[in-house]
Each structure stands twice: as structure tokens, then as C-alpha cells.
Image (cartoon, rainbow, N blue to C red; front, side, top):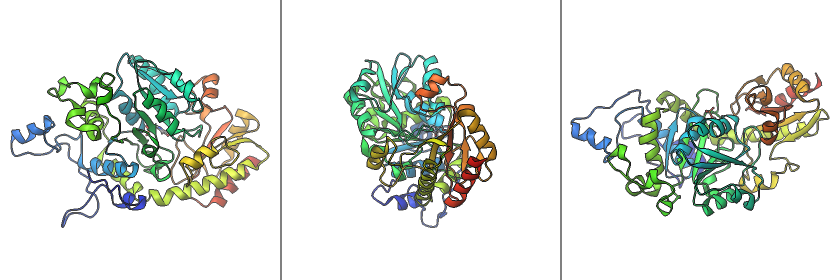
Length: 429
Ligand SMILES: *Cc1c(COP(=O)(O)O)cnc(C)c1O
């Protein structure tokens, strides 16, 4: 996998992944083929035995996807990566690759609603238990959540929509002290603003649907392996990686593919094979167009987010503003340390007057649209309590840091003055 990890972030955004051959297409080809042709059965057999690299069926792997996965691996500073059909699939695969019935996950309570459901409800049905911890818990409190059957720790670098910041170093220290990897969903900062692997994370996941695509065009996900977690040193905890896979002729992933490749190879050859949640090549192509300008777009999202947060904080009708770039924010110091260039363009605020004021504000918006989405070029707003977080009780909403009157504003790439003027007239209304 060509990773270009020694180049600057902008160069990686533009050029990592696909390298044209002499006379080959300059733009990454979209390989729309379900299957691939071989001269002999023996040639193809080697692929099925994982003895040779190559493609045989696009439910498991596709060249277009692999170019883009290689680019994302280069951006995060990982050793291997794969694309999935959605961010949900990415988080499910990242966890299910190392957890099975009877196992346990420790997760930050401040995470995306869909991921909370995945872990708390759906994975529980599969026999995988979980304990949720506050992102601000002390190391002792975090340690107390661990059990002998804990297999993974999970958190979001900047949580959607609560905008809490994960102390990646602290979480990684506690995870490693218990012999398990830290998985970080890095959707909001993107590797332009934060590279969790540099702070100790072992696996990084993305909803590429958000800033990476950046244009609200295509749903997708990605998983990146740092290659740093020593599965063999904790062989008893991770038998799926360290003992023979009977569904693959007795291959031991951690032996055959080493630390750098075991995790992604297993997730591809077992989970993609059996669950088939692969990203479409056309989606990977659109994602790559987004990635080519990620380093240009992120600073503008951050600048607009900062301007909107400062405007809202000074407004009398606003109860409080959550944005890690405000010096008044409890995560400000941590955010400055982990993300010197800023975090993201998503700002949340709580209006005075709760649910009713929120609904009136939402109805009055003109430029910003109401969407169940964040992180694209157009500014959009959402009231989580009446949409994405509907299924959560008031206590759960409170624990997740999402009160009923909260508005999430995803600042797009428009002019800051126009975004602010729209928010201002909606607040006056
Ligand atoms: C949107 C989102 C997800 C889920 O991703 P989909 O692509 O919608 O499946 C997961 N984590 C975070 C932080 C998100 O914002």
C-alpha cells in the first residue's frame, strides 16, 4: 500500500493512494466490476488462501476502494485501512473484529447516537456487554469500568453532537494498562486537525459521509489500523487474531500479516466476506474528490465555526454555547493541546426557552437548512432531541450532554457574515 506518509498533509490529500502507471489514467479509475479474471484456477486459489494479493470479488475488496483507503491510511499515519458502506459499518466492524459474545466494551458516554445504539442495544443482543464512562472521568474511574473480559475501549475525538473532546492520551494509557486497544472515531476533526494515532490510539474510524466527502454526496466509512497494537502480547484476549481461523484454512492473522496488517486483513476476509458492507466504487471516487480538498476546506469550516461560536456566546437569547475553540469552554485547553489548528465547524448552543424556543428558531432559518447531517459545504442546523436522539430518555440525553433545547449548527463554507446574519434574524424572530 502506497502511503506517502512522509509528505505534508496537503500533498497526501491530493496525491496519496493512487499512483498512475506510465500512460495510465491520471485520475483514479472507477473499477465497476464485481469480479476479476484469472488465467488459472491455481492463480485464483492463491487469493482465496490469502497467499497472494489481488482481487476476486467486489463484496470483499475493490481496487478503487483500496486507492482511497490507502490515502486515508496515509492521512492518519496508519499501516492499513479499509472502506465500509457507512460510518456505522466502520464502527461495528472495528469493534466486532475483536469482540464476540461474552466480551465487554468500555465506551465514552459522549458519542454519536447511532453508535450509542449500536453498542448499547444491538451489540448487547449479540452478547457483547458495555459500560459507558464520562469523557472527563479520572484514570481511576476509567480503570474501574474494566473487567477481565473487556476487549476494547471506544471514544469520539470530538463527539457528535455534544462536542466534548476526548483526552486520547489518557484513554489510551488506561486501555493499554488493561491490554486492550483504543478505538477512536475521528470523524469531526478529520486527520487535518487531529491524528489520534500520534496520541496513542490504536484504531481510527470515520464516517466519511461528513467532512471527508464534504459535499453531502455519499454515505461511507473507513477503518485505519495504526499497526501499533501487539495482539500476540495479549494473545489470550484476542483469539480471533492470534489462533487459527478455521474459515480460512487455519491462518493466524497476527502471525501471517503481522501487527501492521492483521486487523484490517481479518476485518476484510471475515467481516466483509460475511456481512458484505463494502463501499461502492463510485462512492469511493466521490470520497476521493472530497479528500483532495480536505486540507483547504477544514480551515474554512473552523474559521466559520469560531466566528459563529463567538457571535452566539455574546447573544442575550443564548443560554450557553458548546465549542471547544472558545476560551470559556471546559475542553479549551485540551483542544488547544490536541488540535492547535482548531477542531471542526460544528457549534452547538442551548437557547433560552428550551424546546419551544428551539423550534421557533429552526422555523425562522433562511440560509441554513434543517438537516439530519453535519459537516458539508452548506450550513445546516438540527435540534437533536426532536430528531437524531428521539429514542433517548431525558436522563440519557442529559448524560450524553444533549439537552432538549440544544441546536447543532454545522457551519459550511459560505461567508461567515452571511451565516451569522441568518442566525441573528432567526434569534430575533
Ligand atoms: C455520522 C456519524 C457516524 C455514523 O456514520 P454514517 O456514515 O452516518 O453511518 C458515526 N460517528 C460519528 C462521529 C458521526 O458523526
